[in-house]
Length: 99
Image: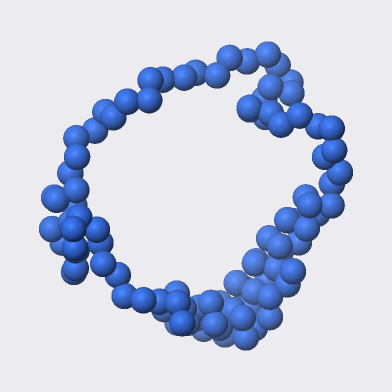
């Protein structure tokens, strides 16, 4: 998968970004480089390879540190939403951005 200049302009428009031509070209190069890496990774045959819980487990026997799955922070939703332009029933309201 490779993007072209028109797709970069469309993505920038949807994200409400104003890109200069040099920025657009640099972003196109970076995104296409990322997609190249993804394609290289997809081409690797991983049949029969067990997934790892941690990449270091390949080199040494490790024990992952775990903690209890409990809420430790107080609920500050109302305080965080005081500066939001629009809120309804505890949810942030945002303008539609996808055409």
